[in-house]
Amino acid sequence: MFEMAKELFKQLFKKPFTNMFPAKHAPKSTVGFLKKVEEGKAKLNEPVPIPEGFRGKIAYDKEKCIGCKLCIKVCPANAFEYLEKERKVKYHLSRCTFCAQCVDVCPVNALVSTKEFLLSDYNKK
Ligand code: SF4
Ligand code: SF4
Image (cartoon, rainbow, N blue to C red; front, side, top):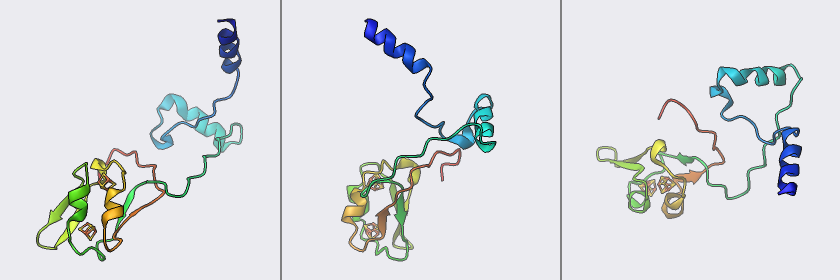
């Protein structure tokens, strides 16, 4: 119990190891911190490097797509819609869970996992 209280007390005076996220939507009460960063009075912690094989936002190359629908079959989140006229698919980012099963199954590499993960926004599209 004493050890826990000691650790807790120690942590109260340490700087945080995380950055506020997402900065662009930070509440007014925290904007002061970002201003300090700009003025060089505070420092943002360096982000951890993104590892190889990271499953981030899916990039879809419509030109490559042959409309085989395999991605539709494997997607657990129903993130693809088949466009009959074009014989292509439409990817709905807001439904995606980034499992990358569609990337593995696409026969023409029209789907690729990118390292992009900062996706918070008010706009679903
Ligand atoms: S990454 Fe997973 S959830 Fe996202 S579109 Fe591909 S199969 Fe669906
Ligand atoms: S698996 Fe690839 S080629 Fe087939 S429909 Fe999906 S994106 Fe297009």
